[in-house]
Length: 233
Image (cartoon, rainbow, N blue to C red; front, side, top):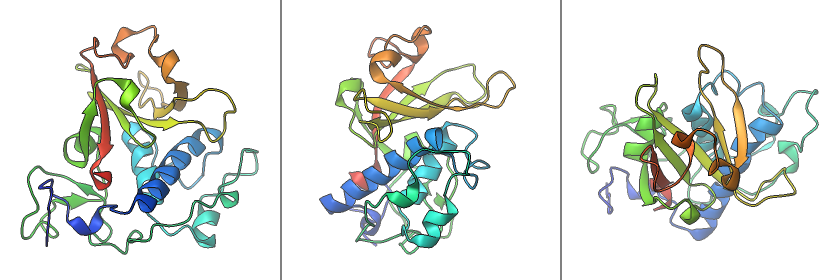
C-alpha cells in the first residue's frame, strides 16, 4: 500500500480533494466549538483534556452525518445554542469513518513510513494523547500564529506538568460568536486536582495571556508552533 509522503499514512486516507478538506475543516472546528456552547452528553465522558476534545472532533468530522449521528450528539434541553441537527456541511466523498483503510483506528502511534504489518501491529489506534497527535499525526507549519488556518493546532510544551504537551484548535471565525475573527478552542485538562473545562478565546487575547508561558509567540520557548493534520497534507 502506497505512502507517497513517507509519513506513515496510506495515501488512501488522505483528503486529496479540496472539497473534502474544506468539509473536514468545517466539521472539526464546528464540533470542537459546539462542545463549549452546546455540549453533548455523549461527548462528556471522552473530553477531559485537550487531546480528548481533539479526538472527539476529529473522529466525528470523518463520520457520516446522518440523522442517527445527529441525534446521538444533540445537546441536552438546558442548552439553547444552535443545534447540530441544523448544520449540514455535507460528508466526505473519499471515505467516511470507520469505513476507511484504518477501520476503527484514527491516529498514527509511531514514527516512520508505512510498513508491512502496521495495520495489525499497533501502529494505528483509536486513542492518542497530545504528544502522539503532535509527533505522528500533524506536520509543522510555522511558529508565527498568524499562519494558522481553521482546523490547525497550536501546540505547547510545558515541562513540569503532569502532561507536558498541550494543544488548542484554531477555529478562525466562530460559528457562535458574531464578533471577532481568530478564535481558538481548548480543554484546560486537570486544574490542580479539579476537573478542567473547555474554553474559547481570541488569539489577540491569548497573546496577552497573564502567564507568558501560554502566549503563542515565537519569543515564547514553550510555544511549539502551528501544526496541521497529516490527512490534510
